[in-house]
Amino acid sequence: MDNLKKIAMWTGIAFTGLCGVMLLGGGKVMSGTLLIATTFIMVLPVRRPKLPRWGRVGLICAVFGVVAWNVSTTDLPNPSTGVAMSCANEHADTYTSTGFKFLDQVTYIFSDFLSQAAPS
Image (tube, rainbow, N blue to C red; front, side, top):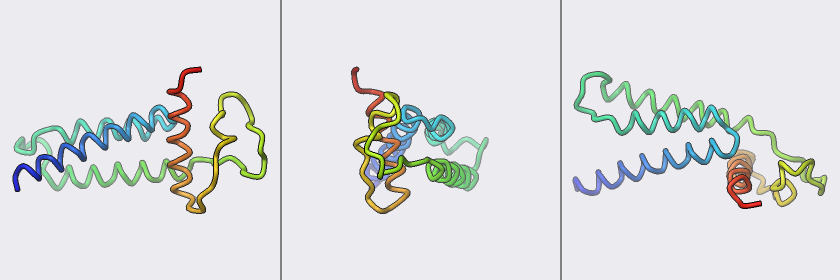
């Protein structure tokens, strides 16, 4: 059971860090920076009395709340216009709505990250 807890903890830490990198590349600098800083806080040992466990859990929940709020402020392109506005938003012309606004915003940020990472 101890190995399962360690695997779950490190998977969560790695997932949080990767989401931070994705948000940084997708244009959400504040959220990406917060998630990467949270990753470092999660890696710190719990046994140190600098920050108690309940403080760390509260801080992590607050950071995820701020990140979710920041992602929800993402402006989605208008699907009725079939033409992309500029070359900087090449992924906007392939954007399709799923009907769930928050999921659409997350996939839009992820596609922005992928379009930035793709070779020109």
